[in-house]
Amino acid sequence: MYIREISTSKLFAVFDRRYTQDEFRAACQVVPGSYADFFVLEMHRCLFDHARDIRAEYKKYYAIEYPTISDFLFWKYGIDKETAQQIASKLTKSTFVGYSRDTMRIFDDETVKSVLKEILSALGEFFDENSD
Image (tube, rainbow, N blue to C red; front, top):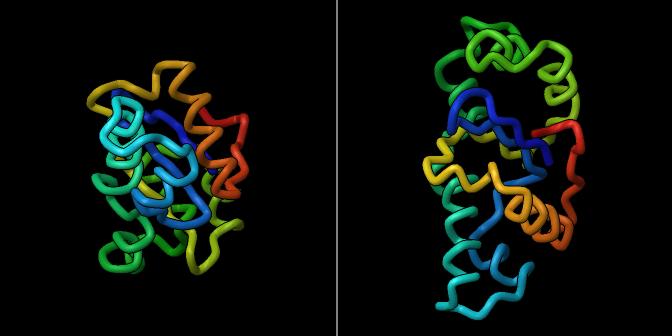
């Protein structure tokens, strides 16, 4: 898993796959309807429900313009070349690459980042410590 803030309140994220809200809830074991549940669902909405699917966007609109997805990530989204190449080399059929707005700025908080790491660890994701 890789998350990087690419400009104020804009996030770029890479996950092994796209996770459902139920998977997020089960991973963190929150009580449905609780404040913690609301908070976990807000994280999920930001990262998955409201995120633009970059791979689908590339395949549908930009594959002709950019010869590789790493070029697309570099030129369209400003991801540095080395990181873009690392991401491209790790892509599998199920990898989810998303672009979203963190309008609540929740990912600025270290506690939120820690909780997200725990959730994704429970889901079997590896957190890239070099991401923001």
